[in-house]
Amino acid sequence: MAKPVTKYICQNCGYSSLRWLGKCPECSSWNSFAEEIVYSDKKNITSKTRNIIESKITNLSKVSDIDINDDKRIVSSIAELDRVLGGGIVPGSVILVGGDPGIGKSTLMMQLSDKIKNYTILYVSGEESQKQIKLRCQRLGFAHDEFYILSETSLEIIAAIIDKIKPDVVIIDSIQTIYRSELESSPGSISQLRESTAAIIQIAKAKNISFFLIGHITKEGIIAGPKVLEHMVDTVVQFEGERTHSYRVLRAIKNRFGSSNEIGIFEMTGTGLKEVLNPSEVFLSQRSKGISGSTVSASMEGTRPILIEVQALVSSSGYSVPQRTATGFDYKRLAILIAVLEKKIGIHLSKFDVFLNIAGGIKIDEPSIDLAAAISICSSFKDTFVDADMLILGELGLSGEIRGISFAERRIQEAVKLGFKKIVIPSGNLKNVKKSKDFELIPVENIQDAIRLIL
Image (cartoon, rainbow, N blue to C red; front, side, top):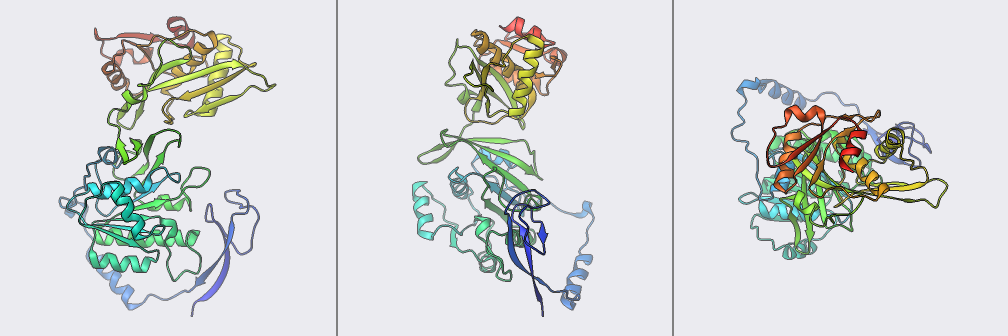
């Protein structure tokens, strides 16, 4: 008989210990250990297991003999979601969807269920009753016949129902509520999350069923549960956005079947999420012209260039230590830009507060908007404005040089579509960009040249 062993497991990273610890030695988090009972049952290989092993060996195939023509992606009518997933839903894949509470995860999954026609959908909810889900269906104008609703948290019951109705897509909301009865730990614990997800992956691969797992996130903004959870699944996408903004960004963090840099833009409305097919135009629609501290740059999100407005405000500080605040931009990167401006341009910002904002609630990680951010800071400091039809591209180095960027041609094409006539680019990109009478190229080599030519 299996012997129960009490262990203490960190709920952040999964580190286990035979005794309770105040601080996790693996991830350094405090008060994260929870008691769990683990059964140490070392069984010998049974005859059933031997038969499974022999069948697997018999079915071993060369890569050239595997036929994938029948496994076509399931394409929905939500183009932004299909873009993030790499062209559609791959049969047999497991997709983890994370995001803040109320950001729109369940709404997106419900709308996806309605858009996938001629496929059987099973929606499993461990947080809502069937009547509550039906009310949301009515609000969203749901009109799908092959749609089943199940309010259940037991994985054994869910697996039995899957065997009965044989769905093509299963949505589980949320994975933190699912539990396996053979485990003594409570739902949402490290053991339950890991083992439940492993069983779901086994079902998905064996029966060629696509699974969407909705996951909660922690206060740090990462998906709750062990990091191994993200390694186990095929795709990890996360909803981003501010509650005060109507726009939502669906970002691919990991994707085995497509690019991991793609994003989809949605707008939250009273009737659900609506796609934003031209995000550049939307993000610049409320832009004020002829004001200081505002520039426009272009960021590559996967294969799509997006024009964004970079806003800066420099004001006298009333504190001994001035404030440095960045929204949608890396705070450490902002500190570097300020240091370069003080060293190379001679702008002394030690007595000024500096605020930097990416308009629209979007977060930008790539360095190609460094020059635009630096110009916005200088523009606000000098109280002068940048031409409204100017696009600024370039990465700023520590010595003040302007480094080349990738996909400069695509960024420029997107800007020209929206009426931009002047393009500031690094000198290193000049030879790779075709000149045209529709726009003027302004090459710059360092931050001094950029300030002189732009402001």
